[in-house]
Amino acid sequence: MRDCRPLRLMLVCGEPSGDQLGAQLMSAVRALESRVEFDGIGGPAMEGLGFRSLFPIDVTSVMGVDSILPRLLKILQRIRMASDHALSTRPDAIVCIDSPEFTHRIAQRVRRHDPSIATVNYVAPQVWAARQYRAKKMSRYFDLVLALLPFEASFLETHGLHARFVGHPVVERAARMTGGTALRQRLAIPATATLLVLLPGSRSGEVHSLLPVFRETVAAVRAVIPDLVCVMPTVSHVAAAVRARTQDWPTPLHILDDDVDKYAAFATADAALAASGTVTSELALAGVPMAVAYKLGWLSSAVARAIVRVPHVTIVNLLLGREAVPEFLQERCRADVIAPSLVRLFEDKGVREQQKRDLREAVHLLGFDDEPPSIRAARALLDFVRERSRVSAQRASIGR
Image (cartoon, rainbow, N blue to C red; front, side):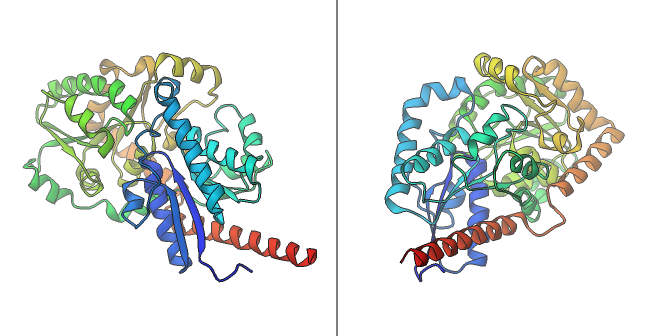
């Protein structure tokens, strides 16, 4: 049995989507375990629950070789800071949430220096999509993987990883998809106006590469749909860049700074254009028809082409095994091909309704109709920590 001290968990995330998942996990753990302390690395959502982060996540919120290289020294410094903190405080478990380029290196360094510290991965990297050998490598420094997608756990188990499918916590945000009418009224957007949500990503590199394409796309769509209005949710560390790059937007544009307004926009949007990522699952949950666009830098793109072995990047499409949501990647990430797809979503009722049915099916596969995924993840995490503590206590007793 664990001694009477509180359970201590170190949570580590590197970007806003992981921050959201971390906050949900914190709430779920507290619902099941009254005496628990958290520390580590998180963002505004986790800090809103009393979490004290070792440092902000702005530097680590990057993806792709092109974006990582300019910040590599700072990222390495923060990997060392986080792992040194874990080694000095010795939590009951370190939970690494997504952002494998950052969080996995912390787990690796901790494992090298103190194998007795438990390490858990929450949100497995898509090793089934590219470089499958990474799954075997992960088994050397992770004791447990909490998998979000239904097919991941069995794949990881075949590579020597202890894994549990817990479902995707994004489905718990359904209750937050409200307030659309009030948002339109506050922003003076007519109830009859066609509303497009734009989501160019939460990383600075994404904003830099996608906003010009989004601008051209919006201009082309407005030529067909003159009453088009755009809203653009953003996050704090890229908000200034978003505002600077959206001057003279071709439609009325409202930039939204918090999640309450973001979810209200989802509740009233007619369609969305989004960067690939967790936000596409949120849109699916809200039933917002969408198109997905993404463009990597040339070096990251060359690497991806060499190693990626799946036909889709959007979770909805991966779950359904077909392109239910249109994807416009790399060379196809152009206004002249994206705009007609959005116009179809606005004007063709059959296309809209078919995608909405597909989104509902995908959300079901993510665990929407089961026990809340965060609770399942928290229970699996707590069971793991308690069992590990029990076994450790037994070994200590035998050794005495």
